[in-house]
Length: 387
Ligand SMILES: C[S@@+](CC[C@H](N)C(=O)[O-])C[C@H]1O[C@@H](n2cnc3c(N)ncnc32)[C@H](O)[C@@H]1O
Ligand code: SF4
Image (cartoon, rainbow, N blue to C red; front, side):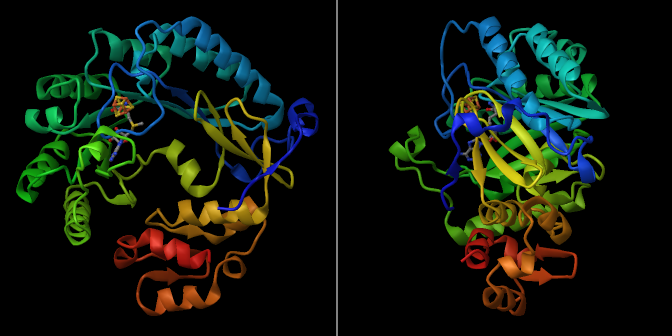
């Protein structure tokens, strides 16, 4: 991706009222991501930004987050907040009273949609039996549980601090407490057999969850797994497991809507759709970032950094990368609305035609989408379109 244009602090639009002046002109959704970078321990596969600390002064971090939220208020203008997402790290370690403080601050500071989605990622090993009801009282209305595996041997292999019983107990509590829920699982684990994965799929699709995220294990540089020389599944085996997973969940009431995400119709993650469809969002907390279109300008926001301006081409490339992850594909009119460029003129025409001819892409008037065959080589295809 090309480098962004840095703009001096004095030229940043932080002191100017808004943008379009109206609530989300063109109904562009607007999300706020709050990152909590602290974890109880480091999982050997994880390369997300995180810190493992005994004493975390939660109150002062939350007050700093509130100051930062205030600093972005003029940039976002009166955009209506359609989702808030507490991600990690481990945001279920935040005291529920502080979650409530952040939510109510956002609700006081911005117009908020009546059906706002407020998600939180939780790890299953909570020491507080009332955590989930407390989070619900705090305003969270969608809970995403990091189950990761449904057997003790693999939970241990993944270095998780919870066991199967804790995962199932937490799932039971989540299902009892919330109407909107999700679980994360990692598959293609070292030595994992397809028949064992099928059993886990049967189990996870039988709980009545509204949403399931299934990630193929990636071996990231600098992690313990990489240091141990653990290798990801070989390409053909990974593709086979991916297609099997996709078909299985489709047959069990969870059609895929994004590369790794499956949902009961009507329960897609609205917040994550903002990233995939190029909506507006800001990110608070270490390593969090945002994108805001204000008038003709597209701002790249990164926590603790000055704002930068993206060129239409830079944003266009991001929109292609994200949009083609959706099974619905990339909406060409949204693309134009978000970056100001025409999709077919932006992408490499010759490569687009070849990809369509070979059955990797469908190029319609309104949408362009990956075929099942295209999903297996998505990154390569995106590279060709943006070359
Ligand atoms: C922000 S992370 C962690 C959320 C939460 N702290 C947890 O561990 O459950 C979100 C998800 O990314 C997935 N993930 C993290 N590292 C991964 C990796 N190397 N390969 C595949 N999935 C990964 C896990 O399923 C995890 O639940
Ligand atoms: S997987 Fe989750 S709990 Fe484990 S280190 Fe990463 S963010 Fe923390």
